[in-house]
Length: 396
Image 1: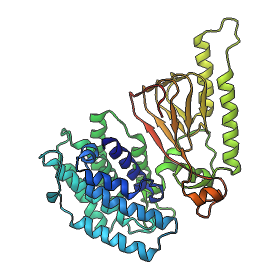
Image 2 (image 1 turned 135 degrees about the horizontal axis):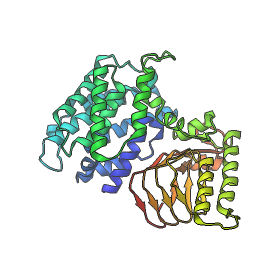
Image 3 (image 1 turned 60 degrees about the horizontal axis):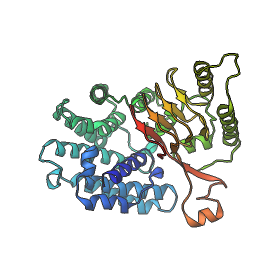
Image 4 (image 1 turned 180 degrees about the vertical axis):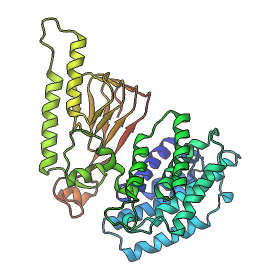
């Protein structure tokens, strides 16, 4: 159940950034709710009841986005969910241990979920962050952060609610406090969460100016696009932006077709090159291969990345490698979504990372058309691999 909880939570995080990205059904979340084993609470601190409730809203949001749920049917779901979340009490829930911090965490996730509900149906047109209902939930999350000691083992579980509080506030002192709290979590865990930090900075950079005149400057607008703008060799187009955002997209547009063709040619060159110098050695071979990696991958940290051929990519530009990355033979990365690999990660042979997916509806597959899209529509997911990680041979 712990593994299911991990995957379902990652899926919910995608749904927070855009309901159209959520993949798991309510039945999966119901399984976690009915298990009563505390796996989700142990993992992130979010009560399974809150998780199930926000999952229902995200699923309905996806249906509304896809045009299968009218606004007059969606609004009662939003109203009922907000009422449930506001009335739900952590005192009535069960937690893995008697520690009082669980109830504080539960309240933080309750208000984080309220903030997401309030951003439907369109985050950019929803109520501005100055509205009392937004300020109330932001303050509640920060109050929880103030009540849990920073050296507590529970503190790191506040990362996601703190991020939402920072993304929703207009108060400089609240933003500064969020930065302080997240910095402590980074220090204590060793993970830098750079994409999250960059996203908060972007929101706070744009919010005072608001050049587009949005009613609300939403972090969801830049979640993947902000990360993509840090990459090299990107084939920018509308369909590329849809692809890395986890939306259905047309993979046959010229920009994406050309990028995949160039990646195929690059793979052939990388996998078949061998030095022809008078006295070739591994040092010259590594130097040449590193230069090739710089030419196709979105980001390579440092100068110690080493990937044994054969190595296959879909685009290459959507791959971020941390420092001192090593992969043994036959690594495949289908980078239709952004793939981030942390520092000092090592892969065994025959590892595959697949950030691509395809439509699963029967009629859509028969027609090769999905929800009014063009032929060749597909979907993509974001993949992250942490720091100091090892993947054994043959893993996907």
